[in-house]
Length: 255
Image 1 (tube, one colour):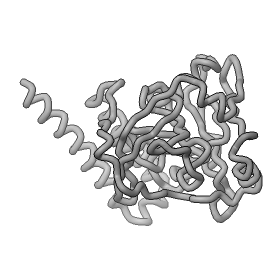
Image 2 (tube, one colour):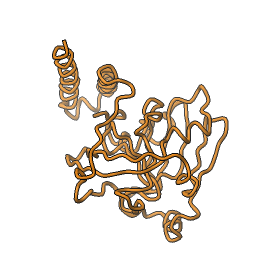
Image 3 (cartoon, one colour):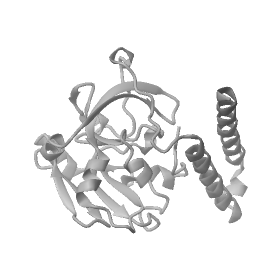
Image 4 (tube, one colour):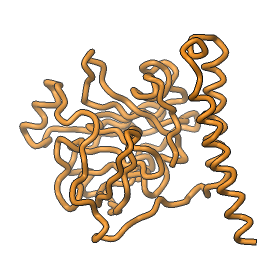
Protein backbone atom coordinates (compact mmCIF):
# COMPACT_ATOMS: atom_id res chain seq x y z
CA UNK A 1 0.00 0.00 0.00
CA UNK A 2 2.81 2.41 0.87
CA UNK A 3 4.60 1.64 -2.38
CA UNK A 4 1.40 2.30 -4.36
CA UNK A 5 0.94 5.69 -2.68
CA UNK A 6 4.56 6.65 -3.44
CA UNK A 7 4.27 5.51 -7.04
CA UNK A 8 1.06 7.49 -7.48
CA UNK A 9 2.70 10.59 -6.01
CA UNK A 10 5.68 10.27 -8.36
CA UNK A 11 3.39 9.75 -11.33
CA UNK A 12 1.36 12.89 -10.55
CA UNK A 13 4.46 15.02 -10.04
CA UNK A 14 6.05 13.77 -13.25
CA UNK A 15 2.80 14.31 -15.14
CA UNK A 16 2.66 17.91 -13.96
CA UNK A 17 6.32 18.44 -14.92
CA UNK A 18 5.73 16.92 -18.35
CA UNK A 19 2.77 19.22 -18.90
CA UNK A 20 4.95 22.16 -18.03
CA UNK A 21 7.59 21.09 -20.56
CA UNK A 22 4.97 20.78 -23.28
CA UNK A 23 3.74 24.31 -22.65
CA UNK A 24 7.27 25.71 -22.48
CA UNK A 25 8.07 24.23 -25.89
CA UNK A 26 5.85 26.77 -27.67
CA UNK A 27 7.25 29.15 -30.26
CA UNK A 28 7.25 32.96 -30.35
CA UNK A 29 4.11 33.09 -32.48
CA UNK A 30 2.23 31.16 -29.83
CA UNK A 31 3.47 33.45 -27.05
CA UNK A 32 2.22 36.46 -29.01
CA UNK A 33 -1.28 35.04 -29.47
CA UNK A 34 -4.21 35.87 -27.22
CA UNK A 35 -5.06 32.33 -26.19
CA UNK A 36 -1.60 30.86 -25.49
CA UNK A 37 -0.73 33.08 -22.45
CA UNK A 38 -4.09 32.11 -20.96
CA UNK A 39 -3.22 28.47 -21.55
CA UNK A 40 0.12 28.94 -19.79
CA UNK A 41 -1.69 30.48 -16.85
CA UNK A 42 -3.97 27.46 -16.70
CA UNK A 43 -0.95 25.12 -16.79
CA UNK A 44 0.65 26.95 -13.90
CA UNK A 45 -2.56 26.69 -11.93
CA UNK A 46 -2.67 22.95 -12.65
CA UNK A 47 0.93 22.53 -11.49
CA UNK A 48 0.16 24.36 -8.26
CA UNK A 49 -3.00 22.34 -7.61
CA UNK A 50 -1.21 19.04 -8.25
CA UNK A 51 1.64 19.95 -5.93
CA UNK A 52 -0.75 21.10 -3.20
CA UNK A 53 -2.63 17.82 -3.60
CA UNK A 54 0.39 15.51 -3.28
CA UNK A 55 2.19 17.61 -0.63
CA UNK A 56 0.55 18.08 2.78
CA UNK A 57 -0.21 21.71 3.62
CA UNK A 58 2.31 21.80 6.46
CA UNK A 59 4.92 19.62 4.76
CA UNK A 60 8.41 20.74 5.70
CA UNK A 61 11.30 21.20 3.33
CA UNK A 62 14.20 18.93 4.21
CA UNK A 63 16.51 20.28 6.90
CA UNK A 64 20.18 19.31 7.06
CA UNK A 65 22.97 18.96 9.62
CA UNK A 66 25.77 21.43 10.28
CA UNK A 67 28.18 19.18 8.42
CA UNK A 68 26.04 19.43 5.28
CA UNK A 69 26.49 23.19 4.89
CA UNK A 70 28.10 24.25 1.63
CA UNK A 71 31.61 25.67 1.82
CA UNK A 72 30.45 28.53 -0.42
CA UNK A 73 26.91 29.81 -0.67
CA UNK A 74 26.73 31.75 -3.97
CA UNK A 75 25.06 35.12 -4.18
CA UNK A 76 22.11 35.55 -6.51
CA UNK A 77 20.64 38.63 -8.15
CA UNK A 78 21.88 42.04 -7.06
CA UNK A 79 24.74 42.13 -4.58
CA UNK A 80 24.86 45.85 -3.75
CA UNK A 81 21.69 47.83 -4.54
CA UNK A 82 22.29 51.09 -6.43
CA UNK A 83 19.70 52.82 -4.28
CA UNK A 84 20.82 56.02 -2.45
CA UNK A 85 18.33 55.53 0.40
CA UNK A 86 19.43 51.95 0.89
CA UNK A 87 23.11 52.91 0.75
CA UNK A 88 22.54 55.52 3.48
CA UNK A 89 20.91 52.90 5.70
CA UNK A 90 23.74 50.45 5.06
CA UNK A 91 26.39 53.00 6.08
CA UNK A 92 24.76 53.13 9.51
CA UNK A 93 24.50 49.33 9.80
CA UNK A 94 20.73 49.61 9.23
CA UNK A 95 20.20 51.20 12.65
CA UNK A 96 17.58 53.51 11.10
CA UNK A 97 15.98 50.85 8.92
CA UNK A 98 12.29 50.14 9.51
CA UNK A 99 10.12 47.40 8.04
CA UNK A 100 6.59 48.64 7.42
CA UNK A 101 3.78 46.08 7.38
CA UNK A 102 0.56 47.59 6.08
CA UNK A 103 -2.30 47.17 3.63
CA UNK A 104 -5.30 45.01 4.51
CA UNK A 105 -4.50 44.74 8.22
CA UNK A 106 -6.16 45.86 11.43
CA UNK A 107 -2.95 47.17 13.00
CA UNK A 108 -0.30 48.52 10.60
CA UNK A 109 3.10 48.38 12.24
CA UNK A 110 6.79 49.21 11.87
CA UNK A 111 9.63 46.98 13.03
CA UNK A 112 13.26 47.96 13.45
CA UNK A 113 15.99 45.36 12.98
CA UNK A 114 16.32 45.27 16.76
CA UNK A 115 12.57 44.66 17.08
CA UNK A 116 12.80 41.68 14.74
CA UNK A 117 15.75 40.25 16.64
CA UNK A 118 13.74 40.33 19.87
CA UNK A 119 10.82 38.40 18.41
CA UNK A 120 10.62 34.58 18.48
CA UNK A 121 13.04 33.20 15.92
CA UNK A 122 13.68 30.04 13.95
CA UNK A 123 16.97 28.52 12.81
CA UNK A 124 16.98 26.11 9.86
CA UNK A 125 19.59 24.50 7.64
CA UNK A 126 18.09 24.18 4.19
CA UNK A 127 18.99 23.86 0.53
CA UNK A 128 18.57 26.80 -1.83
CA UNK A 129 17.65 25.69 -5.36
CA UNK A 130 18.29 28.35 -7.99
CA UNK A 131 16.44 28.38 -11.30
CA UNK A 132 19.88 28.82 -12.94
CA UNK A 133 20.73 25.25 -11.96
CA UNK A 134 22.84 25.47 -8.80
CA UNK A 135 22.03 24.48 -5.24
CA UNK A 136 23.67 25.22 -1.90
CA UNK A 137 22.99 24.55 1.77
CA UNK A 138 23.17 27.18 4.50
CA UNK A 139 21.94 27.84 8.03
CA UNK A 140 19.43 30.67 8.31
CA UNK A 141 18.11 32.46 11.38
CA UNK A 142 15.18 34.84 11.35
CA UNK A 143 11.69 35.68 12.52
CA UNK A 144 8.83 33.55 11.16
CA UNK A 145 6.66 35.71 8.92
CA UNK A 146 3.63 34.41 10.83
CA UNK A 147 4.86 36.26 13.93
CA UNK A 148 4.48 39.59 12.10
CA UNK A 149 1.16 38.65 10.53
CA UNK A 150 -0.26 37.70 13.92
CA UNK A 151 0.69 41.14 15.23
CA UNK A 152 -0.85 43.17 12.39
CA UNK A 153 -3.99 41.00 12.15
CA UNK A 154 -4.80 40.48 8.45
CA UNK A 155 -8.29 41.42 7.32
CA UNK A 156 -10.51 38.68 5.83
CA UNK A 157 -10.11 40.25 2.36
CA UNK A 158 -6.30 39.87 2.38
CA UNK A 159 -5.14 37.07 0.08
CA UNK A 160 -1.49 37.81 -0.69
CA UNK A 161 1.62 39.13 1.03
CA UNK A 162 3.71 41.43 -1.18
CA UNK A 163 7.39 42.17 -0.47
CA UNK A 164 8.86 45.43 -1.79
CA UNK A 165 12.64 45.49 -2.10
CA UNK A 166 15.39 48.09 -2.27
CA UNK A 167 17.30 46.76 -5.26
CA UNK A 168 16.55 48.29 -8.68
CA UNK A 169 17.26 46.78 -12.08
CA UNK A 170 19.06 48.62 -14.87
CA UNK A 171 15.90 50.58 -15.69
CA UNK A 172 15.40 51.71 -12.10
CA UNK A 173 12.45 49.41 -11.39
CA UNK A 174 12.71 47.92 -7.91
CA UNK A 175 12.13 44.26 -7.28
CA UNK A 176 9.03 42.89 -5.60
CA UNK A 177 7.60 39.45 -4.87
CA UNK A 178 4.40 37.94 -3.47
CA UNK A 179 3.17 34.76 -1.80
CA UNK A 180 -0.19 33.49 -0.58
CA UNK A 181 -1.15 32.92 3.04
CA UNK A 182 -0.57 29.18 2.90
CA UNK A 183 3.12 29.85 2.32
CA UNK A 184 3.20 32.99 4.49
CA UNK A 185 2.05 31.01 7.54
CA UNK A 186 4.33 28.03 6.91
CA UNK A 187 6.76 27.55 9.84
CA UNK A 188 9.81 27.58 7.55
CA UNK A 189 8.87 30.90 5.93
CA UNK A 190 11.10 33.36 7.74
CA UNK A 191 12.58 36.82 7.35
CA UNK A 192 16.23 35.91 7.77
CA UNK A 193 18.74 38.29 9.35
CA UNK A 194 21.60 35.79 9.75
CA UNK A 195 23.33 33.27 7.50
CA UNK A 196 25.65 30.60 8.93
CA UNK A 197 25.74 32.30 12.32
CA UNK A 198 26.77 35.68 10.91
CA UNK A 199 24.84 38.90 10.33
CA UNK A 200 23.30 38.76 6.87
CA UNK A 201 25.73 40.56 4.54
CA UNK A 202 24.65 43.01 1.87
CA UNK A 203 25.45 40.58 -0.93
CA UNK A 204 22.91 38.14 0.52
CA UNK A 205 20.14 40.70 1.05
CA UNK A 206 20.79 42.64 4.28
CA UNK A 207 19.18 43.59 6.50
CA UNK A 208 16.57 40.84 5.88
CA UNK A 209 15.60 38.48 3.11
CA UNK A 210 12.70 36.14 2.65
CA UNK A 211 13.35 32.43 3.04
CA UNK A 212 10.62 30.38 1.36
CA UNK A 213 12.10 26.92 1.53
CA UNK A 214 9.50 25.05 -0.53
CA UNK A 215 9.97 27.22 -3.62
CA UNK A 216 12.78 28.14 -6.01
CA UNK A 217 15.28 30.82 -5.11
CA UNK A 218 13.91 33.62 -7.26
CA UNK A 219 10.89 33.79 -4.94
CA UNK A 220 13.10 34.60 -1.93
CA UNK A 221 13.15 38.39 -2.04
CA UNK A 222 16.31 40.16 -0.85
CA UNK A 223 16.62 43.66 0.65
CA UNK A 224 13.03 43.64 1.90
CA UNK A 225 11.91 47.16 2.84
CA UNK A 226 8.14 46.99 3.04
CA UNK A 227 5.39 44.37 3.26
CA UNK A 228 1.83 44.92 2.09
CA UNK A 229 -1.17 42.64 2.43
CA UNK A 230 -3.45 42.83 -0.59
CA UNK A 231 -6.49 41.18 -2.12
CA UNK A 232 -4.93 41.12 -5.59
CA UNK A 233 -1.54 41.96 -7.11
CA UNK A 234 -2.96 42.79 -10.56
CA UNK A 235 -2.24 46.52 -10.18
CA UNK A 236 1.25 46.03 -8.73
CA UNK A 237 4.19 46.10 -11.13
CA UNK A 238 3.27 44.17 -14.26
CA UNK A 239 0.39 42.48 -12.47
CA UNK A 240 1.93 39.01 -12.30
CA UNK A 241 2.93 38.93 -8.65
CA UNK A 242 6.66 39.57 -8.86
CA UNK A 243 9.51 41.14 -10.79
CA UNK A 244 10.62 37.86 -12.33
CA UNK A 245 7.06 36.81 -12.94
CA UNK A 246 6.65 39.99 -14.99
CA UNK A 247 9.57 38.69 -17.09
CA UNK A 248 7.78 35.38 -17.74
CA UNK A 249 8.67 33.22 -14.73
CA UNK A 250 5.89 31.29 -12.99
CA UNK A 251 4.33 32.86 -9.90
CA UNK A 252 4.18 29.54 -8.09
CA UNK A 253 7.68 28.02 -8.07
CA UNK A 254 7.16 25.01 -5.83
CA UNK A 255 9.80 22.28 -5.60
